[in-house]
Image (cartoon, rainbow, N blue to C red; front, side, top):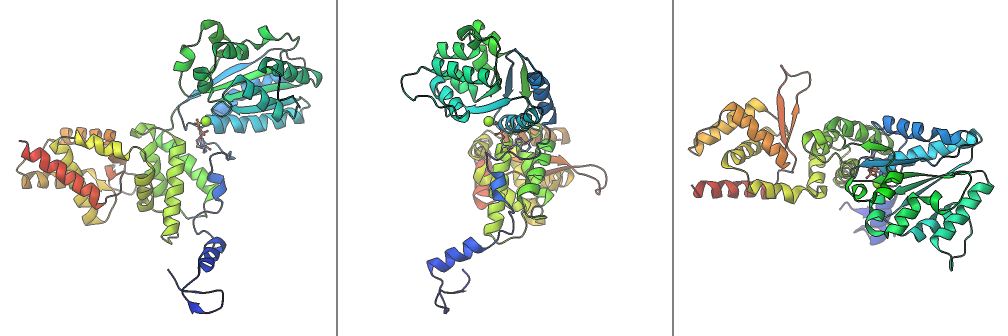
Length: 423
Ligand SMILES: Nc1ncnc2c1ncn2[C@@H]1O[C@H](COP(=O)(O)OP(=O)(O)O)[C@@H](O)[C@H]1O
Ligand SMILES: [Mg+2]
């Protein structure tokens, strides 16, 4: 703790007030706008989701035609963190603006079925958002929907209702309520159909289970969001840091490290939310240490504390065989000796062979070593990437996904001892 002038102007131990004032008024050297990394913030750019925005536009553009009478439905499907909520929200904001500029009255209401768990709560939420007064007692949800529809009719308006986390609703709501939503125009009579839907789900199974009489009214088209690859996550993190980080306050290598952990092609979940969370924690760690830049070290430490998969990774290692563990030990030694996060394939192979001799083991052949590294990558313990230009030829670079602390080292050594003694 540095010595501060306290509120009396004396040079002594800082008071609580001094400490807090110092923290509150100091500017972050890392974040320029933390707010923009929060979950409900809709970023201005959504790299790699341009096609999805286009698809949504194609599906819904007919609503803007005068006298349009159909009710459009689309399912948006993809795993957690693939950008479903962010992309539909961005679409909704802009589509509504464009519609209004063209003189079409379009309202869009985005409901999260995790929060609004019943048809009744959904109907109240819509009424609320349309600023439509409804008595809070005595009306059924069906009646409230009728009031909403009459309101849309009177104003010649179309409503796009986005039901986010819709599988929650399918799993918990009574069949009649799902039926009502899906077949709303069998339930309320209307000359013009004024309500269209975006159903957001994170797995197809809840839809499969639906009765055909309901399913056909929900699953008319499906827009699929696939898990992000490592390169896609890199572009996403880059775009997000440009909005929320001080210029130059994060190294591309750190972004690359995080992208490689979560990229689906690298055995990760392809989840942008987890990647962004790791990014934020890495920024906080750098900030706490008084660094001016987020490095791979910070990202690694962040991963150790954020990644829910870490205990799982260690669990996986319990199944690793002796030679896989020797590869890990070789990598530990090299990283420590060279003070370099990444190690070239050939260097690792040499170190592993030396270790084998120390342990009286016959080293495995090149293809087997490669296979073992691939397996360790699947366990989530290693990252691999191809070296870029600047190095002679192209080679595979290998690094740990976890911080290399003594606990990890002890764990690996004890596993190796266990394998040796059981021979
Ligand atoms: N293509 C993208 N570009 C920028 N940020 C993204 C992108 N995709 C997802 N995100 C961000 O990742 C987080 C998770 O995305 P979200 O839309 O909530 O995923 P889902 O709804 O599919 O679970 C959010 O903070 C979101 O802003
Ligand atoms: Mg979502």
